[in-house]
Length: 251
Image (cartoon, one colour):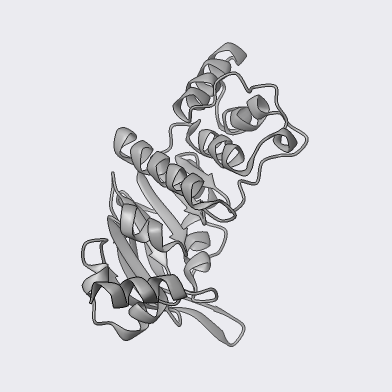
């Protein structure tokens, strides 16, 4: 569990996050949604430790993370897996070396142990036998799955996913959602997902935090999100012509 209390962050005179408090639950897919520029990516970067909050506190299973010594942060970072937007694979490394990268950074395992873990993770995302392929040889969906394998290679307790469906067709995006959801439940991971994807919101939004103008505007889940009378939330959810038509059809 990750607990966020009264997080505030500004860049110069621009207030990006204003007194945000929420809890990301263990074993669940916890979504952060909002328009571009709403502050959701900054919030995730604060959770990872790339930014320090101006005010407020973050704890990982009751362990202090924000505004603490780098040694304590480093210990918690070893328990994190991160799926960057676009996958962010190393172009000069093959699939095997990409997935092995966190193990090289954070463990003293033998090569044989690391290779066994790499193959296990690739098998878990249904990508057997592609160890020697380069990222340039992979489709967008395959790159995302390799990135997921890398993110879970070090057995993380916390998984951060930044726009995991960006650039994917709807069917592949659904497969990625299913995979993240399955891994979260299977390994009891605290998973945090930044997304614009309404399908993801409805399918895997076990907890949902809607950020608007730097404030936590609404919290709920995929069962309550369509029943909300929050105007700003509804404007975000039904901003496309398709969702507007589906809403009118179901009235």
